[in-house]
Image (cartoon, rainbow, N blue to C red; front, side, top):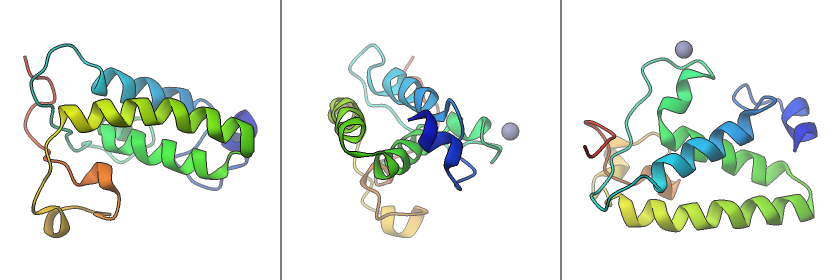
Length: 120
Ligand SMILES: [Zn+2]
């Protein structure tokens, strides 16, 4: 994983990015309560602030899973799959994702977004 991060040509994949993305995705998907959650846009496109948008964290995980070799890939894929299920439970489908979303081909970007991320 560290090797993939260090060698990646993707600006958003850097040493530590996978752990950060996992933490960010988990904290969002498994946040307390049962009310729907809404991802929100990051206000700054730099590699740090981009994690304000949980969908970006999922983008990074997707990228790393793609680049990892066999065993490590399976392990990360399993961990992400658990969070994916939680994310799907806590977010709502966006019927207008095709019009609204950058990369609507990514299912985690086809969820209703905006407003406050926290349901509190
Ligand atoms: Zn920034």
